[in-house]
Length: 433
Image (cartoon, rainbow, N blue to C red; front, side, top):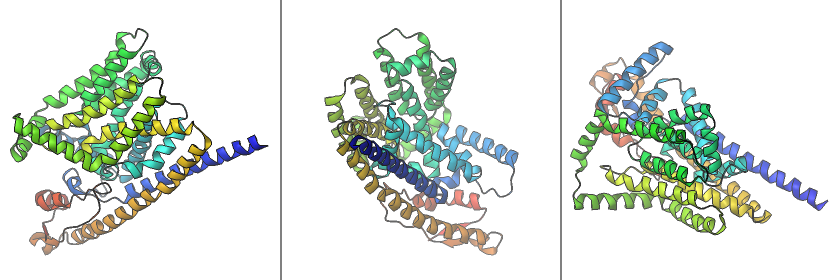
């Protein structure tokens, strides 16, 4: 009788955890749905009203070609142009799928696929509380340019997470084709992260006890090919030269020392809590884990992602996104091990997820407030189109917010400093106070 009651209580706990995960997903959908255009979004699209599929497609291809040739050849940049130029429902669907996949990969890359749904729900219940920069969730340009490519990168790592997964990959030509295509696109997505992914995939192959056929290296080669194409693109060189002129460049000791200091400062300023939690989790995992090689390989990959940003002319926190995901995966792995120690730990984790639901709610309140301010300004400008005010200049005010970067990256500074893009977007002169 007592055993039956215990089993029943455990099922209730799982259903509550599933409910928390579902509610978190619904809040995520709500925020994505109302998140307004922000900053660089205005440079990557134009208003569409009654245009059909082919009309949009032609404009998207032309704009993507222009962006690839003249400024940014990253795959995520082209994704941003696409999602900003199609009906928003499609972007919402892609964003939600990416969010769920992010949590699934976080839950399984380090700790394996056993109890994958349970661990994914824990990840979804905790991610709002610990993720350092939600701009990659709710700012369209950052979601397309960072979150979605990071999910592709995590898929590459996921396929090489264990001996069994690697054997499954090399024994399936269909999976190999998918892996090769995704790896190529992942290589096209970032200048710095492919180094870490190649390291992970290569060493993971080396760790396999049995002999693996050479085909296991194909996704690594396609990833490297995509990376080389991105680095050799003329727009990449142009962008690097532009930012070197703005921020200074070169390889002098003073410059590199300054870049190291800046990366360290930005990393710990934005990611300190996540890093400390991951470090504690790593010590805990190291005590209990029977197989440690790929755990420390994940650590090495995360460290490499962070360190290679030194080569960039400036430091954007969202550039740490892959490292954030790998550190978070270590935390979820530690929580998974802990829950196997007793029912009281499971109950504690469940209680924590219930309490942490306050963070999605807080985030939603912030974005609803931000959206209201941005939409009022957008409505004002659109109401002046085809009037004399539009010719003389529609006067609007800057949108100031005091929210922490972790929740919202207000890009109104970009809006203010790039009036030509705003004028092109609206077809109207906009003057900002």
